[in-house]
Length: 249
Image 1 (cartoon, one colour):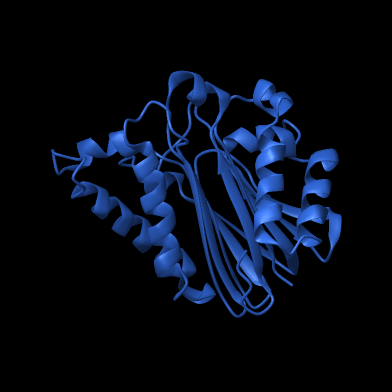
Image 2 (cartoon, helix red, strand yellow):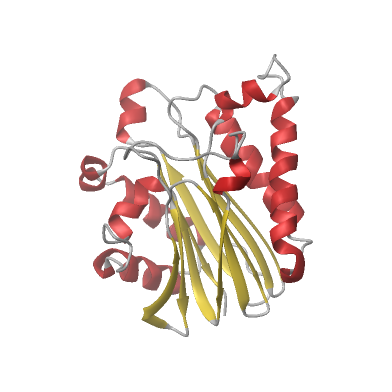
């Protein structure tokens, strides 16, 4: 948990049952930075088919958080694009990209769902699947969702490593929010209805209320891991799972 002023953050990533069975690591990653009344948080889902997707997920999360914490709402869209470009440039010269050109970025393929919040206003930035949700004014019935975007096939999504990534970058603004959650695709099925117009209250509300009443990082994040990693959750979705929760006020 990070507590700088009013903002608290908890997050966890767990390896899915499929990756365990194949001997693969968890390819999800998350990062958050907060200073006084400002928050940047990002989660990323590395593509299972990409050899270095865990590295791609980590680099985009860390880069965006490190750079955007110095940003402002007035310039955030431009700054997000620049930060993603810098993350891509890091991959161009990464030791695991011997070609040193954009063709090699496919091996680092990863989605991203992020949020920038400042002075009671915020914006989600999003490429691919996963989701973000901001609850407004303490009301579980009032929320803004940044929905996943998939391709023509259910298993197809978009990555920041693609050549046309700017065409897939989406922004969703919100204000008067007091809680924000970001999650990768392994969690969205538990959190939302299939059309993303409704939340699954039996999942999200207990998670949020537990975290709000548990100030100890170890206990809170262990509870998240247990919730996402129990046998029933793994049977429903065998993918890696990441969830990040932030209390803004």
